Length: 78
Image (cartoon, rainbow, N blue to C red):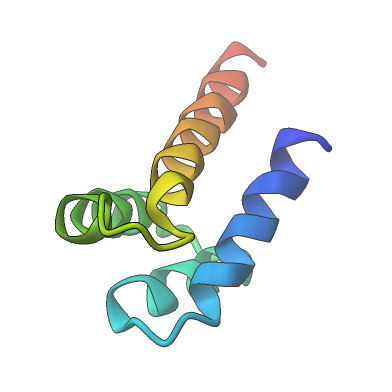
């Protein structure tokens, strides 16, 4: 699976999770919004608050951040 599809898959989960912290920024990003910074901030906060609770999202916060960083690096290399 390529990085873009994987990121969309993760953000779809966040968009449907019911946690306002992640739901809004994930939905906006998936809709083509230019809210990358807001999404990164939400992911960092979610990781700090819940990143080791044992839920399925624990590893997804870090993976989404890594994928967003990789996407931005590719953008600047182009």
